[in-house]
Length: 487
Image (cartoon, rainbow, N blue to C red; front, side, top):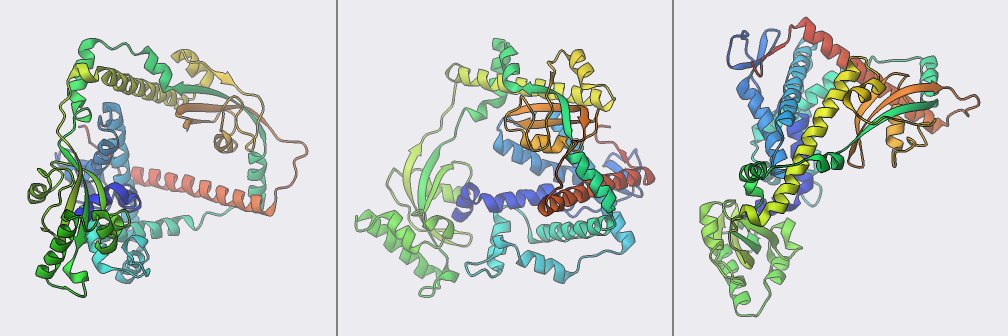
């Protein structure tokens, strides 16, 4: 468990790999069992042909994403952001149920051998020699509150979707002439109009009342308060990993000896941790775990750690997979804020949130107008926004008047006049672009082999994505997809 605590703070690669499992394989992590139902079935949030997605299945996919957002931003998503996220989750569930149905029709499956080979290749479960470690596999999943069955279901179905996509998209072809035309398209000079939405501008326009700030504080006060906390180092030993003392009594005796060496001044705790601890993630840091909040540990563990003074060392205590001792490096008592103490920070956070909500609403209005075929110029006029028209540029120069915008220029190069793209994030600002003119160069040199290969790959990807979206859209109509998330 102590290794779990350290992992939550430092094993970013493993944690974000597992986040990707939830997001990228959102439709399969929980082993959904689709059932038939009608629109009046209160348990359904979507109906896809003869199958349905239940509210419980939706929540199992949606809640982990919300928890990740709260972990990064304590105030959590706004109501508009929550609604958009719910729509994205439901769309993913529907699209991938369509893909699963397609797999059944095409008789596409993933064998146990393919699944095992895929898991064994993943570095998160390998020992120091690069071999698959079954014990580490189970521990990493346990740390992140996933069962082996859940994880293997997600991996099997992720592989399945990969196979389906491959079968569906392998037939995307284009002629050399089409590629030449695409290369000419990308090498044009273009002129664009753009609107920029800057959150800092909206922050300045927010005029909160005192009552609004107090209400905001009450709703978000957990981010200003903090519970009792301790900063600790630890030494972890597991009986199964000790050649010289493979029984619990011997392990506890060894930890007791280390404790006495520290208390008597014969050794430093961090030196012993570096030499003996079997927590590979913390031993090189002298066993340092960092700050631990009260309430995040099982009660029997907290009883061993909290209440000790700075410099004291716990007696050996049992964990799920071994035994541990910990040294208290620092301590902070619980802090309960008052509105007056944190008012300046509350106002700052309030302004930021309201500005974000305002900017998101305007971005949504802009996108709506552009989807309805309004020009960006007309949309800007209707919404009272400033419009900038660029000079001529190409995909290699960046967008004039926009710093560090080469990536944006590359995206815009593939658009035709009147086509638009946005919002694109550049330096924490959101941009909407529309191509207003374009012309081919009179004497552009032929692309190199490398450039031609890159453009071939880009064209193939864009064709595949367009075809896949068209396929999913046609299948939605064919299968009579209906959603009733808010109904």
